[in-house]
Amino acid sequence: MQQSQPQSQIQTSSTTPLGRAAALGLAAACALAFTVRTASAQEGARPGAARAADWSAVDQALGRKGAAQPGGVMRYSFPRSDLQVTADGVQLRPALALGSWVAFRNAGGGHAMMMGDLVLTEDEVAPVMRSLQQAGVEQTALHNHVLGESPRVMYMHVAGHDDPVKLARAVREALGQSKTPLGQQPATPSAGDKGNAAGAGGAPGAAQAAGGGGPGALDLDTAAVARALGASGRVNGGVYQVSVPRRETIREGSREVPPSMGVATAINFQPTGGGKAAITGDFVMTAREVNPVIRVLQENGIAVTALHSHMLTETPRLFFMHFWANDDAVTLARGLRAALDQTNSRRETASR
Image 1 (cartoon, helix red, strand yellow):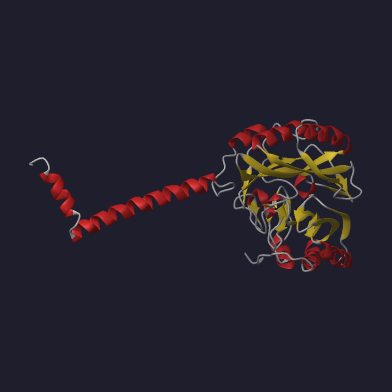
Image 2 (image 1 turned 30 degrees about the vertical axis):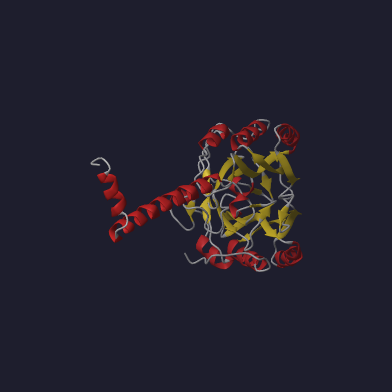
């Protein structure tokens, strides 16, 4: 009898108002804890769930550090500092039009989406392409960007969807078939002709801010250029780079492609003295925008040097138009702004 008394007291206490409240509170706490654990497990299991990716193994495979970009993108640059290329009497800096790059984005399940653009001489195209094909990396375009350059330069666009380290090793092996400098980290991790590819202003710390002093300063009134263009950029490798993303979401297959993976309009200014600049880059356009942009560029003394695609299955369908001019930088910026006005572009104010 004495042994059963405590049990009877416990059972009776749960029938009191205080006991019922305590029991309900315990049950609610257990249910909440279960819900949180379940939600966390589901979030971790969902492909592409928002979580920090560790790119250190990719860094090692490519032999350099990447530059983090908006949209969860990690970008690696390979400036062709070995090439001495001249176009229209201007020696091109790597950041103007000679920057190879690849960008990765976590796709979940141990896979990544990779896109890139490799700058190659004509004799490097075949061995690099063969190496990439053997490793399962696709080519999505091969073409020129400028005209009349010497030596001749080609641009190979690449894509892959696989283990990021496997993709990185494939790219490194393929670039080894060229004379691309691989043994040293670029002075500016985002160097390349789409180095400020994140959108106007780029990623924080990716390059010297526009109009700033120090080693990134240019012989160019970048503030006046930004006001005329209606978009601001950054100084990188002796070039003023501006990137202008489109308003709509770009997808490759079912996956979103952030602007920092090469689908933002890129506009680069390389000073040539006396307030002038050589400009090049590419407008990212839908089909209906192509000819209006051509007309506006021509009206403003800016030559169209190439028109083509960079991807295979993107939506909406995009066309990339490259351009060239060497004249007063502010005047050219006004012409470029008029061309941007023909596109569905998103621009930040240039007053900052």
